[in-house]
Length: 488
Ligand SMILES: *Cc1c(COP(=O)(O)O)cnc(C)c1O
Image (cartoon, rainbow, N blue to C red; front, side, top):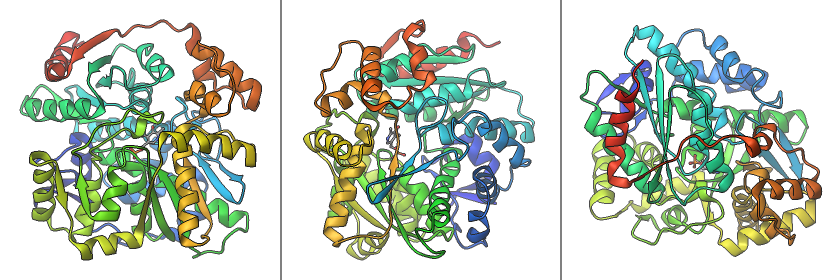
């Protein structure tokens, strides 16, 4: 099975694509024939969640052997719910809770799996050098990646996060990470600075034969592939509840940042799952909303720091993969758009291509006031407490249904536990907000009666170990030091 770069005719097999993360020309790896090969999506829907994951991953990464065992190791006993991602009725909609993994983040779904895939790929290729995982995080990826990779043999992981761009709980989760192969570093800048620095480090260090670089960001196909499963899980649950019949279309509303989550939904659709619209929900950083509406992607705007920091992104990397499919594999066109984005800060997409994209996607954005209002509204109407990222999606769902004059069964993807952002949630619910974040968790618990996830409660007494802070132009040097620092 061959993966191709989005920017040229460069191809490599799935195992190498997994280990390198990014193509040498800077493009992302895609399966140019996605959806053309036979995938029995009906059969997939009949399997239990781990069986679904295994079947999807075997299809997307056929070069990796013993997938059942890898899936079992990744998920068994690590998620607090057997169904992996439970589907909860809220009002007349459904919320797909993606946050029941070891760090209470939706990214656990992918980042529990990725280390297993990388370890298997290394084994199959007989690699002996260390694989260095570089990660830029806007909050949740960092901790989920650290949790997935710490002490995994043959790997080392370095995580960069924006110094003032993550919540207190998120910071605490990362800086307390134990393990003898981990580095965590704050960067004076925003998430885009971190991501750009990591991409630069990749291009500077890729020629070094002693380092095998890989990425835990959703630019890695091994991050994306495990995310298709929950679109199937939700669909199967709706079937099981008798809410839909096989073949009915279901709309999914996705709180979006780097466009990985929602792209997995698009990939599931290409594999046959009856997905209706994928509704792209953005916060005040509304680049994607403007793109889907106008056909112009324009990152030349102020970066807004919001209460949903995992979505504070102006350059959504995985949109490049969607462009590849929208342009029918025309890599020159993708390449030209990405160059324009780099040099001029914007690009425009042809009207006919945008019309086709609007068959699959809708897009809405949500201001800070609307986010807070929505948290209150959903609680008062349905007794459901959601975090700010999920609130952005609820808001988009409401706008989408209003605009369409009603809608098909709708699944709202919930990407974070409200306990990740307890202060903001309490404030939005009109409660008083204790100063300490752990007291905030307790107050939220008093109100909601939802158990506090153990991994978050235990942070209260955990020791902070990683205190490095650097300027954004020092990322590459930091990586080099981390790599040679303690080679064991
Ligand atoms: C990462 C993340 C998102 C955005 O997902 P993308 O795949 O980057 O679009 C949304 N919400 C939360 C809580 C996240 O951690």
